[in-house]
Each structure stands twice: as C-alpha cells, then as structure tokens.
Length: 518
Image (cartoon, rainbow, N blue to C red):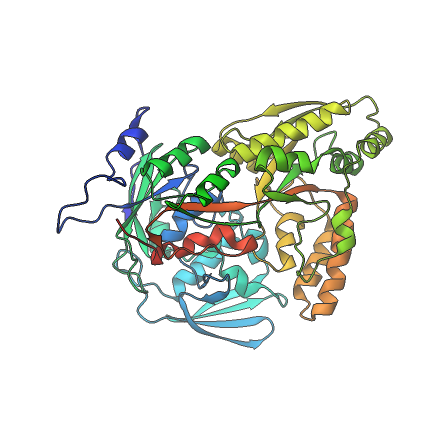
C-alpha cells in the first residue's frame, strides 16, 4: 500500500526536476544502470486520486495506471474482460461475474468478491461523489456469492451496463484499505493496475512504478513520471527539447509543425466537444428562451478558428456523430448562427435591453479560455453584459461541483459511443462540474430510462429522437464545436494507440504496453 505525503515545492522546482532527466541527445545511462523513467507532460495536476470521482482527463490518466475494473477498453475501443475471467447473464437484469484466480492488490493482499461489492456500493453512495452514482443507482442488489463470484441484479434491463463497468470510474478498490483510511482515497492509493503510486511532489510531478502483483503481463516501462505543465507552450517546448517523452492536449496551433517533424509522432481524433452549461436556478438562465437564445447567438466557426486553429467542426444540435443509432440529420442543423433570432428570444423573455452575467471558464486550458472569449464577444455584440471568470482548473472544477456559477464553458467527450452517453448530461442527479447545475426534468429522466431498458434498436432510435427534440426545446445545454484531441511523442515511443472518437481519453489504458527506445 502507499500513502503519499504531499509536499509543496518552491517555484522553479518543476524546472529542476525536468533538468535532472536524461534527455534526447544527452549521455545514455551506464551499462546495467536502471532505465530512465518515461516522462509524460501532464496538462494539469490531479485535484485528487480517488478513482470513483471524476476531476478531469489529466487526473484520470494517472488513476488508470493504478486501478483496474471488471472490464476495460482495448486499443480499438472494444469492451474486453479485465478482472473478470467470465460472466453469465441468466436473465436481462442479472449478471454473475467470475473473477480471475489469484488477483491481488499492489501490496499483495488478495482481491476478492467482497472488494467488488464494496466498490459498487461505494460508487452508489451519495457521500462518495462518484461519477457513476447516477447510473449505479440502477443496481437493485450486489452480492458476493463466494470469494470469486459476484452477482449483480438490476432494477431493469440496461443496454450498456457492461460498457459502464469498463469505464475507469468503475475501478475496484480495496475494502480493507479504504476502510482503514476512513473512505478517503484522495491521496492514499492502493489498486491492482499495472503501476503503483511511488512518489508525489505537489505542484511538480507524480510517479508510478511497475506493480509486481499485477495480474497481467508486467508493464513494459518500469516507471512513468507525470510532470505537470499547465501552460500549453511550456508543454510543447518540453517535448521539443527532449525533457519529456510524450504530451497530452497538443495545442492546435502546434499540431501541423509536430506532424511534419520526423522527430515526433502524433495521433489525434475529433471526438471531444465544447459546450455551455447553465445554473438553471440562477437568473437569467431559469428561462429556456434565454438559453436557446445563446444557441443562436454564438458563432461556432469563430470558435473553431480562434480556439482550435480550424481543427474541429460546428455542433448545431447535439453531439451525436453520423453512424450513431441516434443520429438525426434534422437535429444537427437546429441552432444556426442567427443573432437576430437570439435577440428576438431574449426580448420575449423580458431581456430586450440585455442582461448581465458572469461566464465561468479557466485560464489553464487555452481552448476553454478562447472559447469563453468568443462567447463573451458574441453576446456582448447583441447587447448583453458578460464578464469572464478564469480561475485555475481545480478552482473551476470546485465551483462547478458546488453550482457556484451562472453559466460556464465546458469541454468533454461522451463516455461511450452508444447514445446512452446523453444520460450523463440530461438525467437528473447531483451537481457535477460538467453538468448544468439544478437541471431536473422528470419527463426527460423517464425517456432516458426507457431508452436504456429497450433492447430493440429501432425502438431505441425512436426514443432518442424524442429525447433530442426535448433537449433542443429546453436547452439545458448548448453544444458548440467538435475539437481535435491529440497526443504527441518523440521518435522511439512505440505501442501507443489512440482510442477512437469519444473514447480518446481512455487511451492511457495503453500505457502499460508502451516502450521507448533511447
């Protein structure tokens, strides 16, 4: 087990750490010396390391090395067995999971069905603040049949239940370890993944080393060191100088130069998207006409040009890609750019002379800040009075989780390609930073529940058409643009595969198979 003492370092410590790393062009390690760690340029320091709590892709990248679940996603985005050896489904609402034999946590203690039961119950507990709390509330019962077998009974059929179990937020945690730490897994970690947390220097870096008790093939790299680079330019400079081996969130202005440089590799996809959330309990956003007005007032092409250097695409309805079961061509052209129609809706809502509001975003990610600035300019141009709040990412997350905002810019990705991903946005539940605060719609909840429990594809499609129409009319979210999301790495890195579309942020599942030639 590992309980890390968080240590605050003086300014400049990150530079000192990076300077100490063997870099490209420097002297190689002496024969027989340990290989230098793989250095990953992380875009943000993890707010905490609790695997069941979602606080951004950067934090998830680290957690995915430490923890594993019953299932996971493979390099093509397919759901495959992880801690599960096999499973049975005797009826549409019952699953019986048989664990792999001799599973162990990183300290060598056995992983049993009791830990799986505890984990699922912890996720469903409102006190945890778990990302999957909404969905795991559909579990009627979960029982340990024997030390290797878990039985889960759902209230109703769920077309994507197994997919949910493949998400990193469904990781299995140790019942004994978690209880010993009073349920607090923010800094105390013990998982069963390919790596174990070995060091954490707050504000600087976090390191993981190979887990000797991992059930699978040993991770190819002995150590991964995640160094924090909140600034986009510094992150790219670190890659170009050889201070890091790989970076996430490649700034869009740098993608072309990186792709054309034979010293680097790049993999990107158009899955993630940007959107607006609202605190629907705070005026003026209590009125759906105001929210809809913003859908018409925002120039999505300007966002793509300004924030993403042309690497993306507009979303005029819901973020449902062609080929999806729920794709509706008519709904994709709902919110055309029409400032006149926006002003008309605002006048109907009693805001003919404009309104005053603060738009929450963050200065830590250029895409968030730039998107917010375009939104501000578009709204001010039609007579509104919008100011920006641009705190760091952890502060922005906390404000969103507490509902302390009027409206906000957000960027994320669907958790899976099935249209049920809309449930994470539209189904009523506790306040979460990526959701619209205070949004509750029992009619929407009922439609989403029915679509999830329906196994016939044609019937599901018809239900999602109704769901889309209601969302567009009520406008609890205004979706803005697709954006390209990419990873870049220096020559010599092998074994990394970017997962497709919505699943791009689960690509760190692949880190255990990566190698790097020095």
